[in-house]
Amino acid sequence: MSSLIAEDEISHEIELVWLEEIDDLDYVRQSLDRLPTRRGKPAYHRDGRMVGYALLGPTAKPSRQSGTFRRRVFWLLPHDRDSQPAGLYARSAPAEAVDPRTLEPRAKGYKTERSEGGPPSSAMRQLGITLPL
Image 1 (cartoon, rainbow, N blue to C red):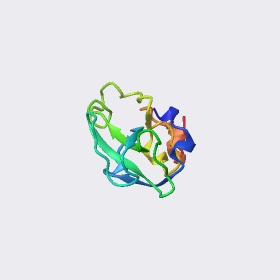
Image 2 (image 1 turned 45 degrees about the horizontal axis):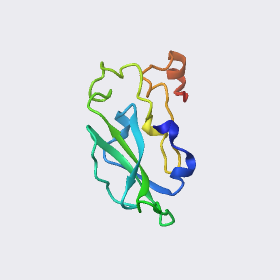
Image 3 (image 1 turned 90 degrees about the vertical axis):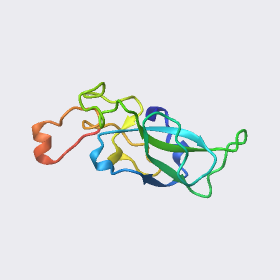
Image 4 (image 1 turned 180 degrees about the vertical axis):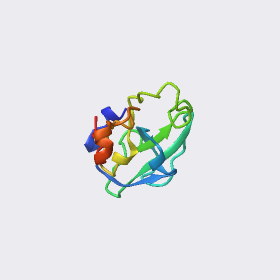
């Protein structure tokens, strides 16, 4: 879950790679996966699709026990809002979801009104303001 990702766990990120245009996505799910390499597109073993992933710098150390690296992977499930706008997450978002426009290397991102499915107020729209939740 994104709320369980600590800043120090992503401190070795150098780049986020997006496999899709994120401007059209209200949210993406993020998780820390154990992967065999610092870089490159990871294998994906969930339902749905991978939307992006993080690359780690050369100072990232593998786990002593497994030899793997913890890297963020961004993904969506078939029942998420982008595929089913009136579905389960029409007016909410999964716990591990964040607005992809708030993500950067070494920053875990956060939920916004848009990611939670609620429209911003008319005053906020007029001013072009979106507040984080």
